[in-house]
Image (cartoon, rainbow, N blue to C red; front, top):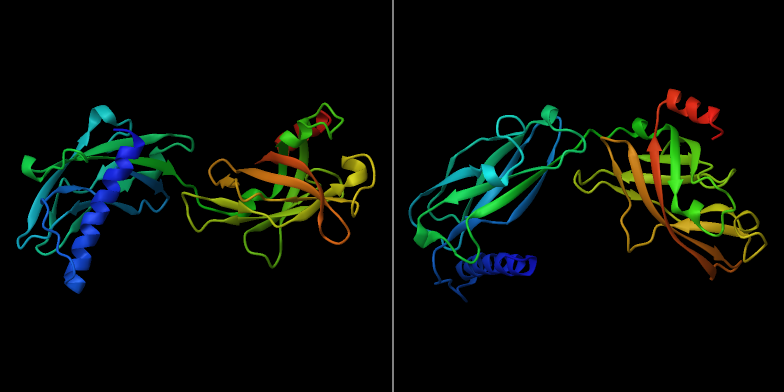
Length: 304
């Protein structure tokens, strides 16, 4: 089934359940279609953290019943590369939708210590229900993808780091190097923020902040800041004399807590003295990787 069909079927399920809910509340509409049982989504992403917290995979019904409904859940081994008992635990092989209810959760627990930082692991679940309760177009299976999420610690993003940038490959940079060795420090008084000293040019520090509110979508944010002079970057005085960088809204910058790196998109522009835009130098990508003092010393010996 292609992505568009999957989305259509998912929306159809949501619409059916929503219509039933609305009908119960307002009396304007009552769902009278078939009684189907299925997973609420065809794919789940699960962040496995040190706490090994329980993750719930929801089973939904299109209609409420006046009796308890027990359904079975099984792992589809041939569609899974995660191993039950090693990478995760299925905490219930049967679940019950109580009378009058439309959903129940299947509890799953990831095993943090057995999942690698770069592992791409997942497992498929199949819902065991009578044939007359199966919606053929939607199916009885779902896929759970697991991603290891290491604890966030701002100190892991301080100290020595390397900056590899597509900007260093642009026509503006008259150099054969594509990497800089710099340092960073936590910014006092600003939560989850570090300052990158001499990020692209000496004497120009840039601050970035880490948003850890969603462990599966760890984002990096940056306000507009000066990163060099037009004399250094372009070779002459233009606009207000500064080149500034900002984070474009069309791309998402992110970080890894397990591998201690940042992938940062940025656009470089020059402004006029009145704040208007004089011109754009393009959009580039930085990969910033934090390294040990020993690794930094070796790079220094190589001329970085």
